[in-house]
Structure formats: structure tokens, C-alpha cells
Amino acid sequence: MRKRAPLQAPSQTLRMKIRNKQKWQRSLSAIIDNQKWLAYLILAPVVILIFFMAYFPAIQSFRFSLMYYNTRLPERIHFVGLNNYIRILKDPLFLEALKRTAYFVVIAVGMILSIALVFSLVLNENFKGRSILRALVILAWAIPPVVNGFMWKWLLSGDFGFLNGILYQFGLISSYEPWLKDPFMALNWATLTFVWRFTPFVTILLLGALQSIPLELYDSAKVDGAGARSCWWHITLPLLRPMLTIALIIIMIFAFTVFDEIYTLTGLDPATKTLMMYGYELAFEKGRFGIGSALAYVIGIFMFLITYFYIKSIYREVKY
Amino acid sequence: MINHKKILLYFCIVIMLIWSLVPLYWLILSSIIPQVDLYSIPPRWIPARITLENFRSILITGKGFRGAVGTTASELIKKGLINSLIVAGTTTLIMAVAAPLIGYVFARLDFPGKNLFFFYIIGMIAVPSWPVLIGLFSEFSKLGLLDTLTGLIILSVAYRMPFDTWFMKGYLSSIPTELEDAARIDGCTLLGAMFKVVLPLSLPGLMAVVIISFLFSWNMFMAPLILTYTLKAKPITVTISEFVGQFYAEWNLMSAGALVAIIPPILVALLFQKYLIKGIVGGAIK
Image (tube, rainbow over all chains, first blue to last red; front, side, top):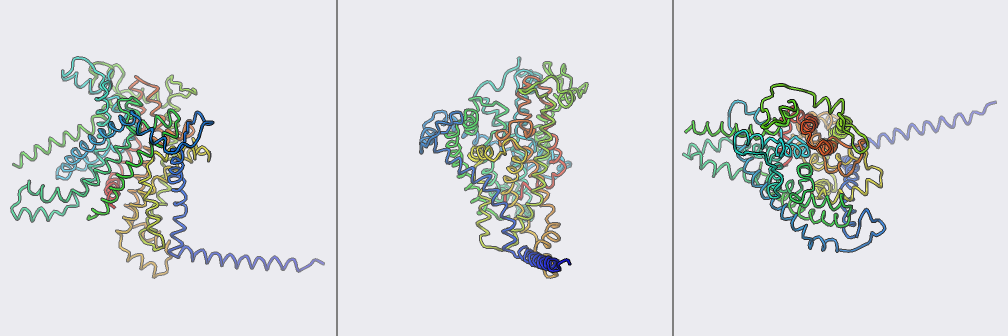
């Protein structure tokens, strides 16, 4: 005779399993329908991802910044405390790179803000083909910065470049010139390359702010007899100011950390060696992770201060 | 008076057109006119003959160029394009699902530590990319993520988080909650209400997030430059920078290569311009 008991037993465990599964399903749906647990369920992977992609490596490189760490001399890695930071602040190359970066940022901020202001005022007018012009203006922003750097290198090229060709065509120069050769000019051209790519972004920001100004304000100002100039000084500019502040800080952040464009435009040429380029050279060309990390943290402190003011200004200025 | 204004306006429009288009025109011109016309002094500004020879040599024949490991130019471009499409495409897909969920969590749900979580994600903006890269390099090499597409995708997804969260939170907060409440009363679960009611309403905002995500991961350069070293994972931005270095002085070929790398982001930007503008404006102030 076959035993019946073993047959019954599985059926019972099966029933248990089914019941358990139902219970589990029910509790799962309860979790998913509970605000707290649903939130944690969605956020858990994000928190882990961000930890490993941002905070952990940041801590890691802070540890490097306190060590003598050259990837080419792995046997000599040792703790040196704040030595790397002291060496950087005493490094004349660092000071020069800092000066170049400051120049780059100041010129870029000034140029981008003024060009973008004019562009956005034009795009805020009513004329035929406005949306086409807006689309064309925005294009430059979508271009990969690396390619932008190359494009300008070609525009400015000394052998057959565009600038030479056009100036020659109009008789302004008698022979072709290498525009990127002079160090000071190279830095200016690098700034222009960045300005060209970043202006559309700021134009769109300012345009958005302009379009959110209620037209009634202008109407009632006109009723009160205000001219175009006083409209500009008393309505447009004050209402544009919050966005101008935000734009200013965004430009500063991005100008401070320009890398791609300079990398293809002039490479590691000392003429355009900003802090970012110098940091790249130290850490990845020379393999000096320790001092490279320390420099990165010095850049990081600048960036943190700028971002801090950015977030603060956003919280203060949200009036839209 | 009005005429003066009109003249000034049209003058500005012309300047804007020149400013935005001339560099691109030069790039296109130098990739489609025969070399004789390009390398004359001054060059021929309006193309008399058009040739696709440059594109043929970089995309198909590979024209002679051998890199350090014997790669041809066409391999460099084609592999780069495929890698970029995979990385940017996957990032975009992931963000299309993740962004509304995370935005929903912050805009609608109430839970302990909400602000803390929000600042944990947004705080990433303040963690400068530069120190992170050095740490990432050693982390990636330990995890075996160096020179892999997976590594690049994980990285680019992570770095889309702050902006996308911020933007979607703001966007969802601006949608009234009545519809959702009605759905909840009719027995919808939280997620059901989110997918059936909130998601359709937030589609324009989601489009903005998706497009900006695509553009950013397509244009990413510094991180892949450091974290990849073979064609297995190098995106087009990196291969194009090498290509440009190797073809030095062959400006026509370099221009054609540059155009190939520019076309996808430009197409996306043109086609979805409306959403792009919404994303830029919304992202900066919300």
C-alpha cells in the first residue's frame, strides 16, 4: 500500500504556502499603499546610487588629498596630512591658473549676461519668424562642448580657418595669422568659445522671466504717461533682477568648471590652463592623485560657495 | 520713432542670426565642399559643387587612419555613435521612469525625513564633480566598472537625479490634487493614482526632463574621458576628440566627424524645442 500521509502533508504545506503568499501579497500592497513605505521603497535605490556615485567617491578623494599618492609610485603612498594643500597654495602655477580662471569667469559672465539680455529682449518682441529665430539661437546650447571647442579651433585656425578667410576676403589682413598663438589672445578666444555655447541657455532663462512679466503693468504705466525708458527702469529691470542673479550664478558655476572646450581648443597649453585644466593635468596626466585631489577640493570649495549662494538666492527670489 | 525701433530690431535679428549660424555654417561648408575649394585662399564661401566624399571616408572606408591599436576612422566614429546611443538612450529611459516616481514622492507623499532625503539628493549639485572623479576612478577600477557602458550609464543616471528630482517635484506640485483625491476615493492605490492620473497630467514636464537627460548624457565628456579607455565603451564625444587629434590638419574630415556627433543632439533640440525651453526655465527657478 502506498502511504497516504506523505501525500496529504504536501497538500497542506501547499495550502499554507498559498495562504502565506496571499498574506505576503496583501502586506506588500499595504506597504505600497502606505505613504511612508512607498516613499522609502522608491528612494532606497536612489539613496544608494547617489551615495556610491557622489558622496563616497568625494570622501575617498578627500582621503587621497591627505596622502602622498602617485599612481606611478604605488609603493610610496603614505599619509601627509595637510601638506598637499599647503603645497598647492604655495604653488606659483596654481596662482597663475587661479588668475586665468578668474579672468575667464569675469569676462564670460559679463559677455554672456549682456549678449543674452539683448537676445532675450529681441526674442520678446513680436515679429514674423520669432519662433524660428528662437530655435536657431538655442541650437548652440545642444552642441557637445567638445565639438564646440573643435569648431572654434577650426574657425580660428592659422592655415585655412574661417576668421582668416573672412578678414582676408574683406582686405582687413594681408596674410593669414595663427589666432591662438598669442597666450593672452588664446585665453580670450577660449572665453569666447564658452560664451558662444552658453549664451543661448541664459537667453532662454531671461526670456522666460521677461514673458512672465504681466503685460498689464506696462499698460497701466502707459496710462500713467510713462515712456519706454522709464518702463524699462521701473518695470522690466526690477522684475528681471531675480532671474539675472540666478543666471549670474549659473554662469559662474559653469565658467569656473569649463573643461571640454579648452581640452579640444588648446589642450594643455599653458596659455589657457585654468584650474580645471591644471587639476586634470596633475591627477590624470601625471597620476598625482594626492595633490590632484587636494586641488580638486580647493576648486570644490569655490564651487560650494557659489552653489550655496545660488540655492540661497533661489529660495529668496522665488516669486514667479 | 517706430521706424527707428524697427530698424534696430531687424539689425539685432541679423546679428543674432550671424552669431548663431556662422560657426555652424562653416562646419557644414567645410565638410561638403571639395578640398580644392576649401583649401584655397580665401575659401569658396558659397559651395559650387557638393561632395559627400568626407562622410563616406569617415563612415565607410575609414580612410587610412590607424590609431594606436589599428582602429580605422570609421570604427572610431561608428563605435562611438553606438556607445553614445546606448548610454544616452538607456539613461533617458531610466529617467523617464524614475523622475516622475521620485518627483511624486516629494510632491505628494508625506513621510518622516522628507526634507533630509530631498537635500541629500539636491546636495549632489554642491558636491563638485572634480574631486568625485578622482574617487570614482579608483572606485570604478575596484568594482570592474572602468571602461564599461554599464558604469557610464550608472554614472549618468546618478548625475541626472538632482535636476530631475527638483524639476519633477516642482512640476507635480503645480498640478492640482483634486483629480487624484477623487481617484483615491474611488479605490485607487497611491501608485495607481500616480500612474493613471498624475503621470498623464505631468507629461509635458516629463518630456522636458527626458530631453534634457538625453542631451546631457550625450554631451558628457570629462567623466567618460577618464573612465573609459577602449572602443568598448568610449562615447562619441571621446572618440571625436581623439579623431580630431589624429586627423590634425585634415580639417574636412574632422568637420565631417564633428557634424556626425552634433546631428543627434541638434535634432532632439529642434524637434522638442518647446519642452526644452520649459525644462531650462523651470529647472532654474523651481
